Length: 210
Ligand SMILES: Nc1ncnc2c1ncn2[C@@H]1O[C@H](COP(=O)(O)OP(=O)(O)OP(=O)(O)O)[C@@H](O)[C@H]1O
Ligand SMILES: [Mg+2]
Image (cartoon, rainbow, N blue to C red; front, side):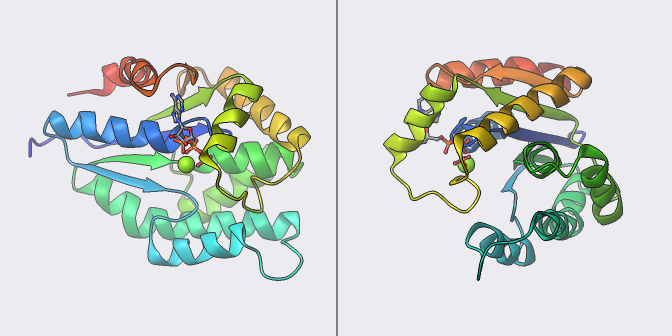
């Protein structure tokens, strides 16, 4: 392994945008360059956070009230940051994360109506406000992305199963976050074959490569 400066990359976007596919392709490309890469996801990534993921995506009972949901995401993230992300960055690895705090900002803060200040405050408390070096926001036509999910044929979880209106609000919130911080976000067209999208992702992180 080549010694490299650690980097933290997060993939964001709505359901079926290709986050997991592109996180895997990016990790493979980085490893081919001799870089140590930790690929992880949210909610989850550590045993504690994966346990919270199950509570969030398959809620026991009637579903979480919005504030409880936001707290659970923040708690999962605090564990993930403390036990996996910070240690990996400290030893010089790259961390490629499938969703991070901007998902909480777009879903719970934006579409869920809790507001950005509340989510940002939870993140400051839980995870000392850690930010990725770059956020790759995958964006594409709503109908085309819905088709991908339908083709995958997996049952929707508690969040994915929310109405189209909610998911449109998520997309709008992501767009607003990216527009407000153009240096942090790279907005990537998610339509096109996976290798085509991957090439766009590589171009968007080229300046971070050793
Ligand atoms: N560029 C692409 N073109 C066509 N299909 C794709 C592309 N990228 C991913 N897919 C397929 O679309 C589906 C969703 O992709 P993926 O799971 O990577 O998205 P995701 O953003 O991680 O979704 P989720 O929000 O559900 O986790 C998968 O079946 C995947 O194989
Ligand atoms: Mg995924």
